Length: 192
Image 1 (cartoon, helix red, strand yellow):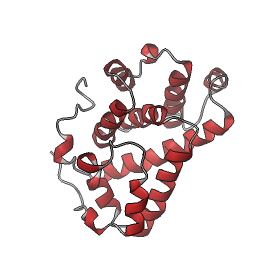
Image 2 (tube, rainbow, N blue to C red):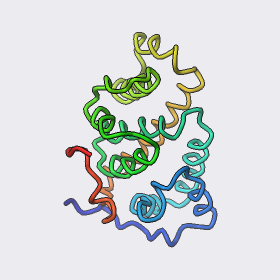
Image 3 (cartoon, helix red, strand yellow):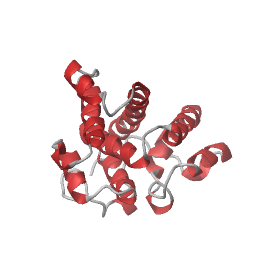
């Protein structure tokens, strides 16, 4: 296992404002034993960036038109596209909490979305692929998605993808270690 490039600061050092923001994250999957303390501790090396980011991240998650499940589809795909075990494993836990099943995890991992019966799920995943791989959306994907994803939601999707670019790149660049509690969670290369 690769050693982290910097030692995370203890999340006991989170300010009351930062703790308050984190308490508003939907669901339980990113709290308690599954809290992403190593990435938060890494981001604490830049405390003002962390506070601003947390506010944007949590406020965005709560205000988006996407359900938490839909957000998790996108976030899991971001983990795949950035080869981020950290993002993937943390969000397998959250995804399970919000109804993503084992077949769907495998589909997200492989990029074969046929198991998704809802056109909206497929559109969100395909748009995510386009945003990351092309840094654009081609006309065919745009036209196909417009019947199930609004203009406002495309803007929200761009914001969600941008949030997880920060998380995925931070994890990869700093070689953030998985917390011991996350090691039993299936990774990108194993079936959930």
